[in-house]
Image (cartoon, rainbow, N blue to C red):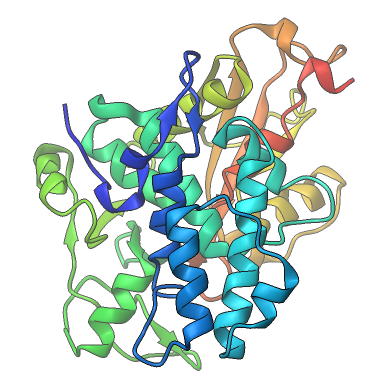
Length: 338
């Protein structure tokens, strides 16, 4: 049993008897200690007083006068953003419900970094302490942008974008492939280690380094691990068991529903489904196709019960993969959506 992603704040949350997460005062305090809000030498007395008061009572009401009194305008804006995020967190009895609610209505109104932190925490909870190393690594793809490199031998490699850029800035040259581009020309390649099936345990010593590369080719363990993670994600939030597996192509006669796991694949799948011609460069960005089947067909909308749901993920023109696991919570054809 492994404890991982300790810096996410997961250990500060409570749980309900049903196994869902609950926001605690200690978790709210941890958010107040983020770099955007933690006091610095230049912090004024009003800012310091508010921070101290919130650390003592993280759920206290902060009226407009207290907020306006903060001396630094950037700090004032940061507190306003934090208070809006706190409101979203506390609007529902569980973190799962608050997370799902972020994506309904007129759109997300909190910074992506907060959304990514919540996604990581929820994945940590869903995976539990018995997650395999490969499952933990592929789960990172759901809250951290990946940079994709397609090698000469056809290997499709995914590396953490932030790590790749950090290595490039440090002039850490290597041979993995063209992971960074600027103006269409390669500038540096990052020297990163590949997480192989026979050496997965190395992940646990580097779980917060985000410096292990994985192969996204069919037949590789990363895709199987991603399927298992997505199955558990759906089951935890929606309460219905599903089976997900990599697929080579879409069976046109079976195609009644699809969900893109990112903006790129959503656009391509929509165009294909509507019979529009898709340019070759857009098709080239499609990295993986999956088939999702409901284990209980009655959980699906009437009329399409028993039919598969096709999923896909794709990279953008800059070879970035930005997965949106919330798409599976919002767009599956559930019976109760009728």
